[in-house]
Image (cartoon, rainbow, N blue to C red):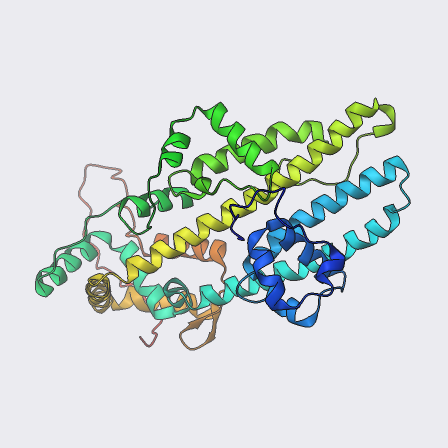
Length: 403
């Protein structure tokens, strides 16, 4: 996100579409870094076909592409409310503004698709995705859930053999904010406790919400302290509350979606009608800040994960864990092979799962079914006091599968 400079908003240069149409990337870059509104103007110029080629490459490049969706989303909301106001007041520019709005929406859809592609690419390269697509790794992890006590015994043995101290079991984070706060407390995020942050932490919920509202109203005078890991949750809570409070006055579809204007402005006093339009503009700003909050939280979580994995003993712990999983599979070959058999219909090639077919929900449901099938059958109730003759055990036949 472009960082606010110390230049006041009255002194900061705000770009117009005509300015950007004649600017190259070298001249444009510092102006985009200086001001979010300039980034919005550049996004509009790009959507409407008025951005020079070098500047377009800059806007879609690594410096600004992560912020492009935010800028276009803001532009869409601002343009929609402007179009609504012009239509209501009979402004002749309403038609042209409406056409620009459609161009921005097309550009926003494309930018969101590109962002989704980047995130999928990043996920495919992650360790978690490698496990999700590997049938053998998935089977071993499911086997751990089927035989948890035995796995813990094997894991303790592997730790003892490796002369490595086991990691203390900790509950997983409840949400991304929990993960960020834990990561910050453990030193995985470099965050300084400044007087401004202490002041924000000490504010009452109402005072803090008012600070967040003021921050949303002025896009180029951002309160960067709100990005601190220990404030991220409070920031999001305040944004959600502001969206809930503003939705009725703005006539919005929901707190998360502006939607079309359904309020009859002609039936209202002029001042009240403008209050509705202003509420809609404010809700657009809150939505933009909410998207920024989500992105910052995700970036923090990714940083924490990366730094955890860079710890010197991380590879050793992973190796011990993997060895315990392998030993469990060797001890339970029939159950292991059965899990592989149940996973085989979802493979695109031997040992390779198709996550587009076996998505997260289907994966969870299949795992529950398989674990239930592997669970030992409960003992039948005794219907009489006469002891029954023992029956020879019949082994369960499991389809064979190569490990």
